[in-house]
Image (tube, rainbow, N blue to C red):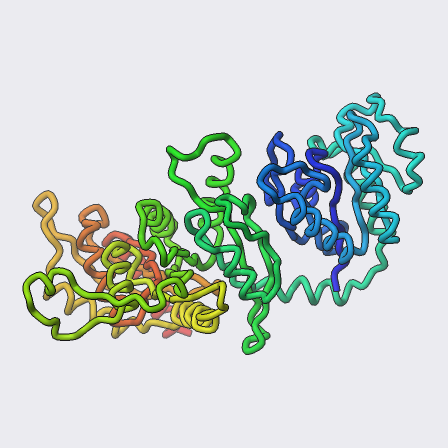
Length: 484
């Protein structure tokens, strides 16, 4: 197993900034406001050829009017218990505080290996109340600047010496997640994203509250399923995305921007909808971000337990005094309404779940696995081009500037990644003549023919000249082979 280092301390001492520097990625949200970090954030870091697990925690002793103080402290204490080494981060400019002394008592009881990390020492000549911190009895005490990187190399060198090596297990554990499928839970605040992850893990891994905006960072959680132990997943919990007019301060804008960035780097997006409220304008905007990023998507209707016992009737048929040919169930009607309002999400599969009752989770991962399988399925060039020819005969491309777009042939590009949307390389007379509306027509029918629901299609078009060049090169290669 990889060795774990937990970063703990009181609020606003620079834990998240140090976490980001060690991980070499901007994973933890950094803001001048105390108490920005609430959940445990976990990331791997590679240092001097060794892979370590870093855990960022919320500030211990935070006075939070929202009522998260106890939950944040529990998360921090859990991280301390599970860690092999603790970086206790303090503020060297502020000196020793009563809260630091309380944290010292907590760490002494745990009997763990603790490094006292004195942060915010930007200048080597800066006085950091060395005697005050030394009297706490924790060794070593290392002065650093997380903002500028000063002292970080020395800190990690000493940390590696303090942690016994077990390189074979570390490499094995690290490589096992190299092909992990990244799954991002995105949606409005308070739709149950964190609850779904906790229900999946059967553990309170992320903080859950009725207060919107509880989750602030993009929290990555490794996960294996019993029925597919060879396929690792990385579950990503994200901050709820509010409408722009409701972003009251800079922190909320950063939270929203971080979620948008997560959509860009994930493999599969799970758009979580609140069954109690249905599709809102903000749901449509988030769905638009997923479409723009060209990410595979599933629509997850959470809190379905709240709809139990609700019956549905078509008001238009009732008013006309006619009975429908087929009476839809409430779920079927709900599903139909979602597809109508989110029509641009390529007929994304819809899964109805209840995080509270832990229902629908098996169907959810079955749908994810099916999405992965279909994204990797090869599409033969012959059937693909015959299908395109039929569609062109049925609905020819419209004229543009007196000219018509012509497809010479199209081939599917074999995916090189574990999870990649279907990609097509097409040769045509002129890519500039292609109208987006006609391409949408093609994509709609290709998804039905080749079972690509929920998957965006990526096109790479080359002009007739490129096609001629490729054909010429192919002929030359054939002649050379014949000579040989």
